[in-house]
Image (cartoon, rainbow over all chains, first blue to last red; front, side, top):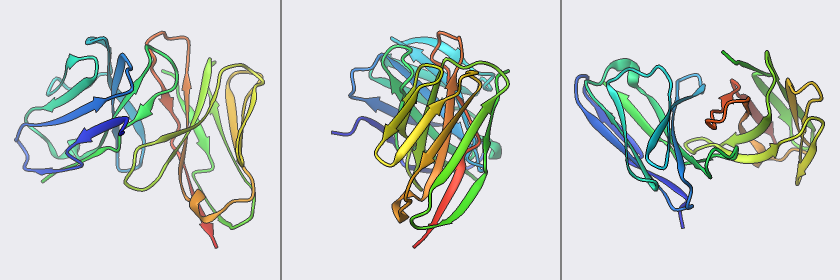
Amino acid sequence: DTAVSQTPKYLVTQMGNDKSIKCEQNLGHDTMYWYKQDSKKFLKIMFSYNNKELIINETVPNRFSPKSPDKAHLNLHINSLELGDSAVYFCASSQAHANEQFFGPGTRLTVL
Amino acid sequence: GQQLNQSPQSMFIQEGEDVSMNCTSSSIFNTWLWYKQDPGEGPVLLIALYKAGELTSNGRLTAQFGITRKDSFLNISASIPSDVGIYFCAGRGSSNTGKLIFGQGTTLQVKP
């Protein structure tokens, strides 16, 4: 009965590789988000999608490309990974633009 | 852009003590949310505040939406060891995109 799930939980990869993180929510929400949490635990929004439409794009390098095949899924693809991409990435969802966002367990990305 | 200042940055207290933390903003927020993050997990919503002056409780937790709409505080009474974690405030301004701005977090440690 997981609400917001992400895979994988951990991702270790070499610089220059391309990787994807998947997110699914079973809450019936129509808005989904990607956040990045750095080593100082600071949480910053990257993207949000409402009904498969991009709503927020926060000055994120275009190596990051979110894709929403349907409103229950929001995947994050990252090209040409760099050392600075190492962080924990959280997916979240909410009902429309309602204030209460529910977070997934996170994906810890380590770029070597 | 909008920023949140959360304090204190960290707290180390004795079990049974009360805890208080707060967030201030340089601009007005329409919503304040308080989240808790356990190690290796995603943030979990504790309390949501929607009106200036609103005081809301969730068990031993109490949070208030400041009258000026530029601040909020969270109190935890009679702390217990499982209160350990990082507490984040988050605010939403007038944007209708659902964008949340997060504070830097308060790391709480409780000594049994």
